[in-house]
Length: 148
Picture 1 (cartoon, helix red, strand yellow):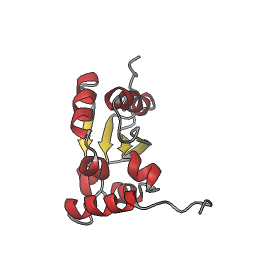
Picture 2: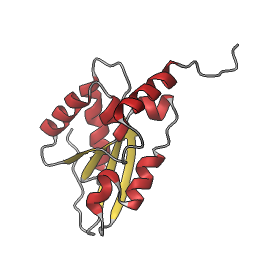
Picture 3: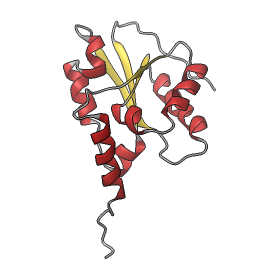
Picture 4: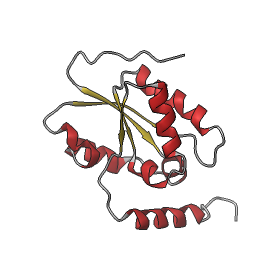
């Protein structure tokens, strides 16, 4: 099923955000840096300076590792399109960390050729190498649980 996009009749840029599951689900990132830069029109959102934005939704990928990542990413994009997104931003973390992001971009563009797919959200706070190393270290830490 192909999602039907709602028309941009009110002049707003209707945006969806596709985030990295490792950062949102495992590391509990609330996508705050992305949303702050969206509000302030910084980073990849600087293209909207002087324009209205409506956030349609934020959704995460299926997580790593995945064999069927390409098949799983399309329904997530369809969900954002269904609710009216005309543009989808791939988060900074997804662009920096994801080993599948190039394949995701390829299948999304093939399935939805008219979709404006934007690579990035917030401006980097550190170099990509520092970010990758910091996230890798956090992912290796054992989460605290009730079980000793």
